[in-house]
Length: 490
Image (cartoon, rainbow, N blue to C red; front, side, top):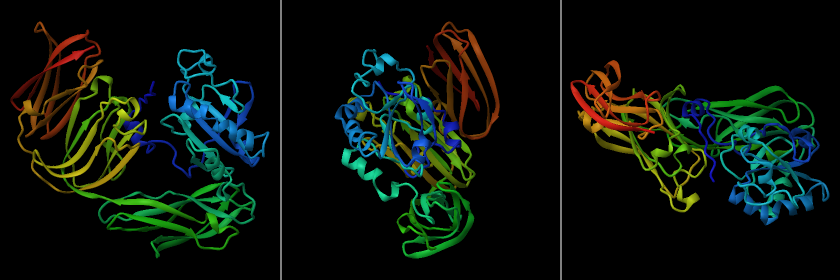
């Protein structure tokens, strides 16, 4: 069984909240009661100086069961838990609310075995709300949370590797009076053309006293890019995003940041941005070709303009779309854009990684000159995997749209449909468009006037929810051309 995530692309992308919380994020607090009736509050454990390991899993998950059976958590709890050195707390969070108590106890129909017998650490059932609060997307997801509230994905590590994480100096509780720390990059990750980008970091007070000032400097290699003298008032473990400077770049660059004023602990004074990418040049005609894998419900994508607004989007897709080749053509204005694609499970379009058989998928984003590819902007094929790809490009030139016929460009998807499909076509000139739907005995069951549409690619909605299941003929007329396609409704 594989968990599917029906994420609406517009909601996910516009919120800027693809995928799960990255390392260095502040862990959301939660309070929940375990299967033995004991209440647990994350921040109470952290405030007591414990490091907390969170195991988000599901009873049906094979890799989760394999790791459970390895005994790593049992060994960790015996050595470092309440009956050992008392450094950590381990909490298993059963995060699929469709599973049952019988599944947890190994007697249900949707389980790998008995998760309860012999388990010495706490189990919280029906924890899907906590799973969602952490923006998780796959099982198992295992975090180590430090007293500072900062998390890292420790994953299916060995006992020794887990211990190395929670016993590191960077994961210790606050103990020094004056200890400012840089815990993450908070600036822009995409640079388009000559536009300046903002370089910002997340500052945390890891000291016992209030943090009121520090100097933060940004570097490109050993070259100082800029700095800021921050002033404020942060209590212990409080954070603030600090703008360090703005700059322009002409190539993809990784910046580093450092607290350059004195404090009591220099080990947590530096952080890196990761690669800040520059845009690739494109024509105004862009084509996205997508071949879905066996799990189309995990795929969502969008094109964002330089204001962060969604101008095109698609997904998640339906089961009937597996193996369907989707082709989207757009005519974009001059300017900066970001193409974003997410796989909610984190394996890209590599279905065979999970099910052993596929089918796998692929995609290509191309700059077009008419109907010919001018340049490939971005492409993907398995076995490469991804959870989230953000790709910046800049439309710098205009190319003409070739006059392809309506028959060549008309597409209806999904097909078959449960009720709502999309009609996609390209018009070489501005033209009046109408659509009619007929059943197989020739009766017209729906009609719609779209008015005069501009030249270029169009995607229109066709709603057959009120229609009976069966086969229909969709007749589209645009600019004097007519084309008909069969559409099946389940």
